[in-house]
Image 1 (cartoon, rainbow, N blue to C red):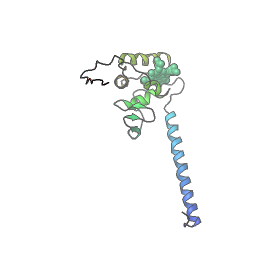
Image 2 (tube, rainbow, N blue to C red):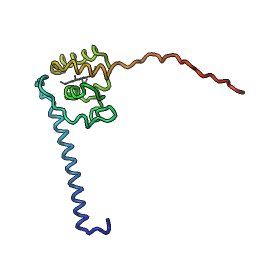
Image 3 (cartoon, protein in one colour):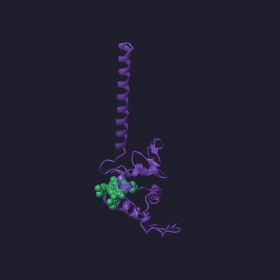
Image 4 (cartoon, protein in one colour):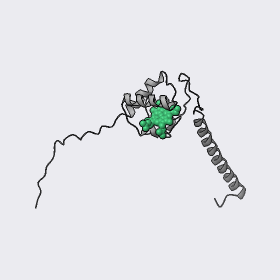
Amino acid sequence: MQHLPTNLRLLMGAGLLILVLAGIGVYFQTEQSETDTIPKEGETRNAEAPLQVEGIEAQIENGIHVPTGLIAGEGLSLVIAHCTACHSAKLVTQNRADREGWERMIQWMQRTQNLWDLGEQEAAILDYLSENYAPVQTGRRPPLTNIDWYELKE
Ligand code: HEC
């Protein structure tokens, strides 16, 4: 660096600054567009309207949608669109239930929390939830087989 003329170094510095500022700008713009999907008080979303969730593929790492922590799978974009509008996806990822259990939670939110009618997409959302967030098996481990006993030596 030392051998570069001062004005060239200044130019590189300015270029770097612009890159950083542009990065910050893009970050805040994506934050903004996420909040745009939240319906206003008393407003309901038309479940038939196409949902604008773009760039999901690029945000998946090791089978997890990084920004939300949701498991990647069929129906992910629907769940991001409908189920992260009011609360964090953590409420979803921290819960487990079978299909009926998820259906009950959705109906409870519709009754009490102003969740909109999910229309024809409800089936696909329930498929996703019951497949990826099914109850954890907490049964006893199966008995050991093929144990290779060894003799204790004095
Ligand atoms: C209209 C707003 C809204 C939308 C959209 C919404 N929820 Fe909720 N949900 C809530 C509220 C409010 C709560 C209660 C939060 C609390 O207790 O802190 C809640 C709670 C939950 C809980 C916790 C329930 C419990 O028993 O603790 C789960 C799980 C959940 N939501 C899943 C979902 C799923 C799945 C979707 C998408 C189908 C969804 N939510 C969409 C408003 C919404």
